[in-house]
Length: 205
Length: 205
Image (cartoon, rainbow over all chains, first blue to last red; front, side, top):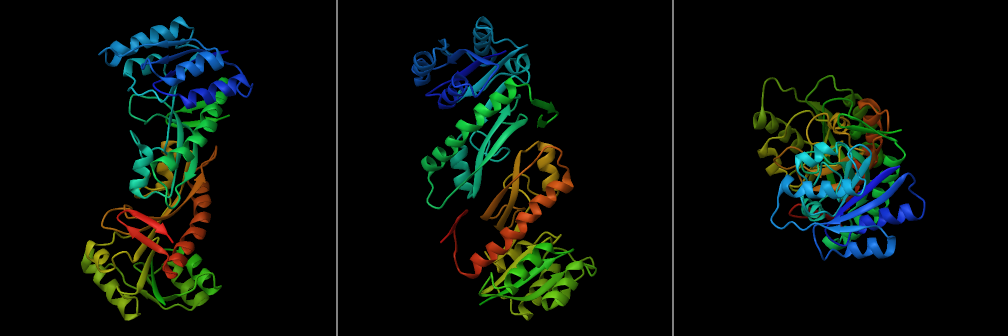
């Protein structure tokens, strides 16, 4: 059994997609143990506790940065059983950069989803970057978190077309629909022990 | 009527795909006028002249670089009616960098195809770059040529999956099949006057 912690900052729609997939049996072997938000007002906290009965915890930044903040997160993860040995941490719209110390402790056990086909359009506002570049195909990427920004080994990607007349809102919505399929699928594969990493190359067995 | 020139260095399989689409009436308003190769032994020369009855010309580098070389190409294009005003130039595996002078003369009238979803994996060996990065989705891009490397406005893109066990050969073959669809489609749209460019953003009308 994989104990899962999810980090959010807002509505956590990808969190909800993962929790729904677990609740309805599409993901096995994964137990959601704790939802952590740096924002006290994150709408996802209520969804997690009321709709999915998963414990939640707010850890405000209070000026703490890097590992000084992240060690509070790690302490909470451990308290709820999400360990570096057998846990899984999913970032779901968590608006903080993860420190190298956190990444190293949970080596290849932290996942993130990015709204572009990495390595295109890393960083913030990936959908706007794609529009400004004039891309005709963009998409989303689930990847392991490493010490860079959106640079870790790619687990799954899904292509999404840009269409005439798209703005940031319409494109983001179209990508988000695919994110809600792709992220639970990656968690499912992780839970089933089917993700093998060799260097940058990830194979699904 | 758009007068078309195609520049090749080898077998020119994308050239052949475009010439076939014209021959069989899938592209209208575009007349192939001249195939130019920098390599005397390029296999595409024979295909162009024997199978499609299109004039060919070899312009060896002979140590000429940049505009010193390109002006010979431009002279040949003009001689065969591929003018900066109403012509179209397609690069099809042409293994030379086009000089800024050439690009400026044929502004938004030079197309290229690249075996990746730009801006990911520009430059040489794009398929190997995608494999080494561990990308799960790559593809191909038809774009206008500007003064950078694979940086011009994107006209069409097509996604292609990377699958377990792919090597450079299998992935290149899968992408090439899509190139042979995408490049003629872009030439067709150009011939029908349906490609509108605003800054980096290209819309198909």
